[in-house]
Image 1: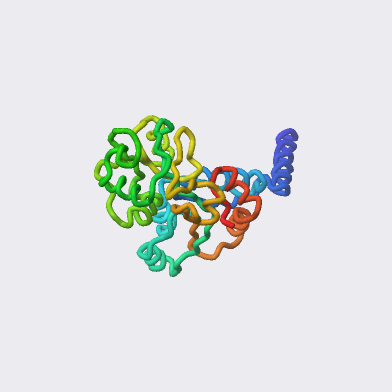
Image 2 (image 1 turned 90 degrees about the vertical axis):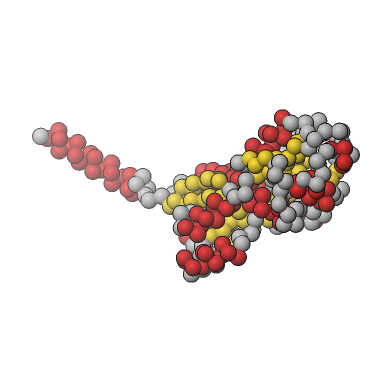
Length: 274
């Protein structure tokens, strides 16, 4: 009996110590969902932040900007990552459900890149040529200074913010060619283009391994050209939240926008927001 009493006292003491030193302290959970363009950067932010802040758990998933925006509207994510601005119809749905138009937070800049195979000799395309290629009016590389070969198109799925941005700003609202093959993420587009000498695709600047980025209107998607606006397909990458951030979420977002958080933007391959 004495042994059981001692054990019980010992367990109570251990529990008290754990509570005192935070062993049972509640963990603040932050969910982040959306853009596949942003997912690598968002995961890196989360890893670094959690490494310094043990009382915070940050869960990051992709799925596309449209998926993240829907989750924000449905109340199933705290932060939505998006590679395009929210549409007025989406903002209206958010207002109808939560009585707010949300808060838009630019968190990085991207030179939306046009990918070709390393074997492709075409070095520069105009935005007009890109529009004609992806809408199907130009179908052979010889029409833009390349070899006599059919152009194979790789695109993102329509729930992607990059798909929407490219359609709005490069295709000027025109539909993609029926021959364009939709792939579920930027990494998939890069992998497909890297394996196909006659292909072309598009996506974020941080995904440039195994392919070559062509110049657009004579400018490469370099930091200098993106920050100056000379590169013609320069865009902001966003985080959206339903209300003005408070508590741990505010601390996390403030850290992302700090010099330390923005240094990680450059480390991953995108460009600081300021």
